[in-house]
Image (cartoon, rainbow, N blue to C red; front, side, top):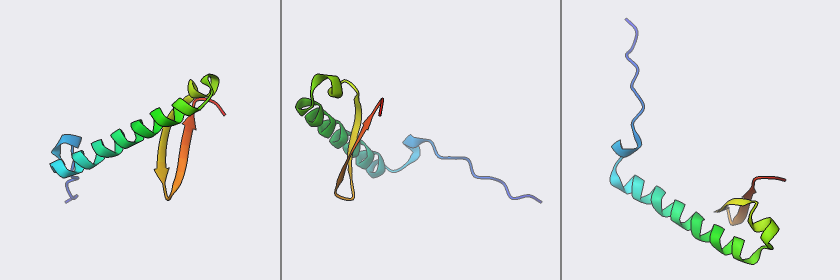
Length: 65
């Protein structure tokens, strides 16, 4: 007989510490984005959509190249 597949867990089914960690990462990325947009010229700041730090590098995502 085929093995029954386990359904994916909903995000709220994970332990609270996981959700707290993910929420703190999102908040950190939003703070970085706000700081980056503050120092960029207006035409670049409006195109900047997301920022994060990974392996000691700042990654900046924009809606256009």
